[in-house]
Image 1 (cartoon, helix red, strand yellow):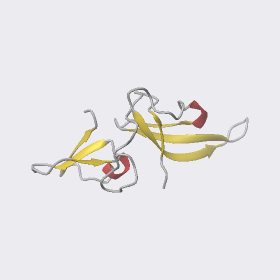
Image 2 (tube, one colour):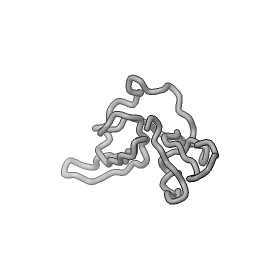
Image 3 (cartoon, helix red, strand yellow):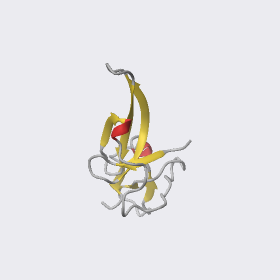
Length: 110
């Protein structure tokens, strides 16, 4: 499974395109995307409103993969609360299923 990346329309951090869909309009169908960034912002917008697909200045050229799914780029550190276990990198999609009462979730850079 290939992931597409862009920058967040709200804060400019790395973001993943998590969905694609088409909505009707009076001028014909318009392609839209769902975008989620590493800081937790979620957007649904017209695909042509996205910034260019190249990374913004300051982005790493490589992404650390999520240790849970091993397919998507990680954007969060996850560790079990009250544990000495080292924090591990997780992606946004995998973090959504975590029990927040048992895990600490911290965005990269946060």
